Image (cartoon, rainbow, N blue to C red; front, side, top):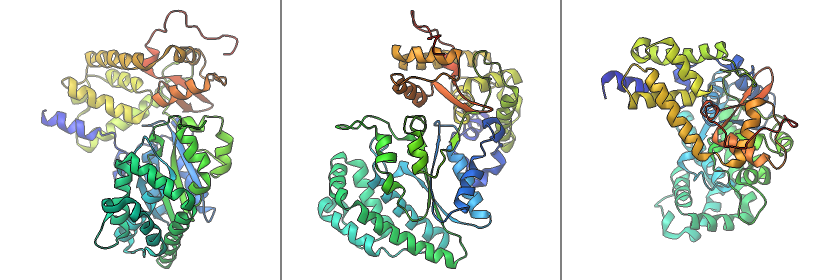
Length: 437
């Protein structure tokens, strides 16, 4: 890999922008329907003593970047808050998440970040007594010479994550005493809030990211899916922390029949981070140039940060704009497409690279689309505001989850086909239902 190729590959990372990467950030609210996610979330926190909110959106839409912007806003604005940012990937199995694991991640990350950023050491107190009750169950797997809130919880979380059998045993053991563990965690939160208040902070805020990436599947022996179980059935616990907390949430749940219930449970609103509008709503779907220009700004910011000339990466502005259109307005997908071309082809990116991407993208979606998906796909091809009926709702959620459908919130809310799905021809005999469209 040449030096230039290596630099381009690194600068187009799909990782969320951190607060110290403000030079790479391009404001996109106007192209997302002026949703102003950070302002809404921060305003709700500053207006109340304790809030639980959720943030939904497609994977790769920029939720994590917005949460990190929110973190900076809360830490530097007036009044300022102490913010604990939690990413669930390190401690949780995405395929199997319940409240127990959420609680352990929050406690561990509080202990780590309060010590690191504020030199506050939490006294485990009642929480240690609750954890001691697990040691007999977990045995030698969690032996430690002395109790340390961070290391001890990390060790227990690691065992739970890596052993489904142990995970089930722990959940059964904790089920009757879940509220006691929550009370113990709230003792720690109360202690932290008291100490932070003496240091001038207005309160404690926990940002719990990556729950939108949980694997959504039916729960055995129930009529619920895993996301419904966590955010609705477990809502008394999820909303029971005595501090401000925001969870990222799967987009499909926000679009489900539980929409109003979720609003009632989580702060009266369901903020969304939609796609960037690069096309107008079907039918027609014409190129929307302001969105193309904004995403080109994202590319320019990345290139300028490493002093890379535009014409070293793209053979023309037209090639760049076509790549942006193929991203469907998904920032992380745009990053991924640039990296794919860098790996597979020589720089600069040319029309031949775009043709290869189109072929591979069509192949990927053709493999995953079932016949029952296609009727809904064709409805949205002709009408971006199509409303699936009850029988079609699971299919609609599948399409949102796979990003075969992309959600936009501009002057009005609508869904469009992923550009690679738009390139596909439907199977024979599939037609939209004109009466319902």
